[in-house]
Amino acid sequence: MTDKNRLGKVYLFIVFVVLYAPIFYLMYYSFNSGGNMHGFEGFTLEWYSEVFHDTRLIIIVINTLVIALLSSAIATIIGIVGALAIDRIRRKRVKNTILSLNNVLIVSPDVIIGASFLILFTIAGIRLGFASVLLSHIAFSVPIAVLMILPRLQEMSPTLVDAARDLGASRRDVLMKVILPFISPAILSGFFMALTYSLDDFAVTFFVTGSGYSTLSVEIYSRARAGVSLSINALSTLIFLLTVILVVGYYLVSRSSMRNRKKERAAELGVPE
Image (cartoon, rainbow, N blue to C red; front, top):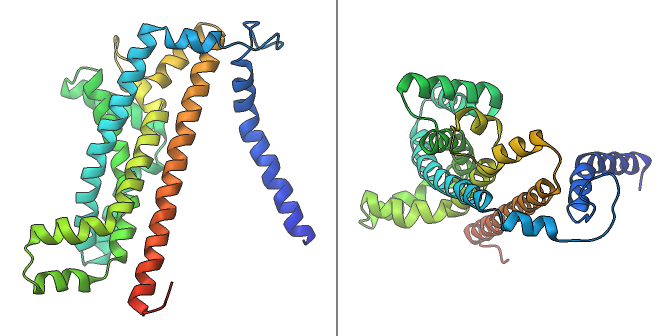
């Protein structure tokens, strides 16, 4: 191993330590029976029990999951339609312009997006609550879904569609039996990515949520401002583990997609696997 490779691995290790040390510190004290983060006195699950016995918090968890699942599903459907429309554009300048507009919500600061949605909902007379949070999450999830689906769609050979039409397939059959099955791994990837973004979002949700309605990220922020409680640690640990599960699921879907692509290319070239 060269000195350059060794130095790169050491640097990468330091970066991971800096990123994950606070998270593991928080998780470690979520099991502290002392009730503070100044010294570990003993192991306990009291704070996790408190989280699961908090009726209001359970309702907020349900709200968060409903928003995340519903917004991700709707955004993925819109993303499929958007990717299909963009893929059919033949003028390169127009396609690049639309792709740039699609990426605006991804590269823009969350504070700006949240404030913009707040102003929009206020002008439109939309009451802040479930509807405003759902619409906001759909809006910033759609570009993610499009970016996940479009590359897979562009990899599809036009001969597949032509062959299906030559065999008498209607447009609906081509879409349902040829295009959608081919891009299904990308659809799942887009859904998981949108779901992860929705569950983790705070800045945008903070602007558009109203009184009487909250999500986990906003609730954790509100409780943290009220004072240090290890129930926040327990809740944050559960959210982190859920996020890890979603990321692992996304990785497995992406890995399966790559394997399928290799098999398809091998089949096209007549090369044994």
